Length: 469
Image (cartoon, rainbow, N blue to C red; front, side):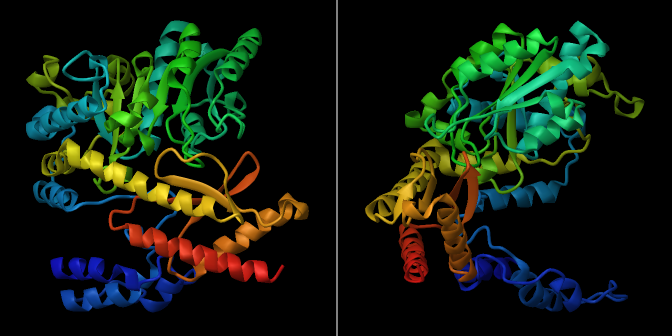
């Protein structure tokens, strides 16, 4: 199996980045029932090679530039192997003391790398936990905010709670709000503009909050984003938190992608004002080489989270937990069971060290800058919003006299052509009504040569498209 995995990485560029199969292909090519007798590993790996891999979109291909990267590393692999080896179900401290205490340690390590205040660290008055994804981080903090507010105002106010975010906030925010019982009518996604770089305006937030309060509604929660999915826009944490705190709101910072960059001093200013917020999450699987899934959540007041999520059945009672001398992470998440994920981060931090992780971030940002310069050098293209991290938002803008509909259609055709070659995979978004092509640098195996080759392919597609005009 190790040889198979090594060969896969060795040959990954021979596969189309975006899978070319049609829906239902796999059921037509594999047996309809499980085998009665065992099959050899060789036979199974043949099926993986011939049936599974053709249906894979290769997120680890160096030519994958869609969405955001999902990074891996040898250290992450080794940590995952140890995690599987131990197969710990570390729901409370006594179930595996090392699993709990290592998680507390690496969470504080990463907080220190980010220069977070001690109020977010176990060394101080706060703490953190590894969730699966940002979706769960937002969900559990919404639950904590809701229950905290209900304790103050009473259960009759649930239908009056209002939550706030920008229209660029990830769609998981609205989904989590619905799960915790927030009426869809009370989810405020405040419009942003291209002139403001698609960041959330404190002035507009203040106006929305005051209008809701005049109508008898109760401001509950603000989600601030550091690096939006569409364009990596950065909301001004300090100014927004100042507005929210005037009205007693819980403030969460979703830094899933770009938060990792803040381990570099030149990006740390994006976290200015973090001391004013209640919680912060980022996903090391996006940019810190941990592999899926891994989302670090810090909270300033763990008591609010634990009170909202704790369970204490008889079969889990033990003197350490009863004495409140330990952390039981089952009370920091939705589920009970949890894997020993901190091993991945521990091995990564020890194997790379902070300096090499910073260099890794800077390398990706540097490659994005190379691509940005290519775009700026070709008058047929334009940069839609300034690049800040590893994402370049651009579009083909052949002739404004044809109108916006034609420009959008041209970019759709260009994207379809590029992706159909199998040589590169990109994605798109709409921001402020503008159809944007996204070129996200960060796949672990990507080098300058892959960025150069991708740009040549994009130009080739543009040449072919414009010849038909």
